[in-house]
Amino acid sequence: MPEIVLTTLNARYIHASFGLRYLMANLGPLRESARLIEFDIHQRSTDVVEAILSFNPRIVGVGVYIWNIEQATRVVAELKRVRPELIVVLGGPEVSYETEQQEIVRHADYVITGEADQAFAALCQTLLASPGAEPSNVARTIQAALPGFEIKRRPSGVSLNETPQAVGTPIVLPYDFYSDEDIAQRVVYVEASRGCPFACEFCLSSLDIPVRNVPLDAFLAAMQRLLDRGLKQFKFVDRTFNLNLTIGKAILQFFFERYAPGLFLHFEMIPDRLPEALRESISRFPPGALQFEVGIQTFNEGVSDRISRRQDNAKVEENLRWLRNHTGVHVHADLIVGLPGETLQSFAEGFDRLVALHPQEIQVGLLKRLRGTPIIRHDQEFAMVYSSHPPYEILQNSTLNFTTMQRMRRFARFWDLIANSGNFVRTTPRIWSATSPFSAFMELSEWLYEATGRQTHAISLDRLARLIFTYLSKHGQDESSVAIDLWQDLAATGRRDCPDFLRAFLPADTSSRKSLRPAPPRQARHLQAGA
Image (cartoon, rainbow, N blue to C red; front, side, top):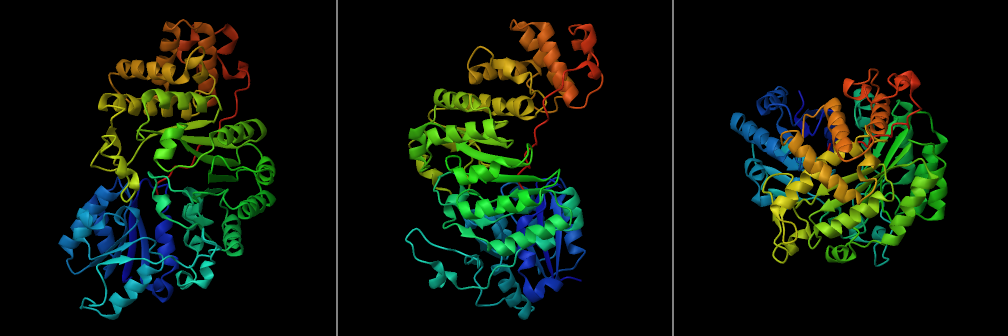
């Protein structure tokens, strides 16, 4: 039976915990005494506790994140109630900041803040070496040192390899700990670097400086092993894949040389940094092979300055136009509602500006007050009020009251269902054919909310299509042309029979799939975050 159990509750089964695999890889000689077991947040806490205790471990390491903090708190509390002598060690971003304020910490024995890859192994060695006694030389809260990634330079230009910060055992990469089931059925996360050079105040990555690169040869060798095992979809979690051009080009070249149909690479990208050398590498990939998550967040330069975000908006526009006009990259762009000082009008202007650049997806997200982030320095000046429950979303501020924020929450939800889903590629542009995209979609969003009986979830595709048809028809659009576009969209989802509400408005030869004009290819859907 294992002495150590590593566990977490993922947002969904499809996500495979990257952090747990790093911990397992770096356990050294304790690896043979450890077991990794994952759950998801929809499982009952008592069932999770039963599964963990079935291994009769001495130590349980729990990964704690914003999406599982409530469920993990119940699991840890019940573990300690049933087995008080069990040693529970917490780690993860949610308990790495404001640590002692949290209920889950009060239930646990130890907390490792920061990157626990190697610190967890050291703690386990100490605990297992003194059974039945609490080591007197171990603090309850342990600040992990940076792991032994390769760091070239600090902003000051001093090589970290020549400083005490570089001392430590090189980190072991975790990729061999993805199972065959993971590779066949789940999202597989990879990273070529950690950290971010920027200081955006809403983001935890801004606290993780400097950027540290995984040794390239070892990383590419690990990617080759994953390819050899049949992996086709790689989700890079690096915050700045295009920061180091040499490494970015090498990774793209590696995958291009091994390209086969079905290969899909997801990267997060700095939106205003896309030099010619990188463009050449990107443009070689066929449509659907690359997806870039592009964090725009705001086009309001005053707001950007206020939250310490550096961004050249003219370059952003130039780069997005190039990606859409000259590559097959699927562009997923992010905007944030609720940043301090951002008004509804300035957000609307930024949204319209982004729509005009034609990314395949625009993620409209509400600002979250993540633990440890310096965004709280604006709380008083801008009357920032956040939910006290995960994911700690903004409720109101001095420029967007609660009612307006609720309208924006519904706007984001309906935008996901219609524009981001890929189910209404032809029909969506009709919504704002003659006006501001933001204003037009806000009007539709409010109409849908009332037409569904104030519902934003559990709306079937057929019902949503019928509602869109009704709305566009009531707003003066030709019913026949709307019906043709809607049927093209529904057929592209795989539907074979034309819905009755459309059939009467279609020409006689367009109610079967055989007679349809070729629909645009379905765009690759982004790999969901949160594992």
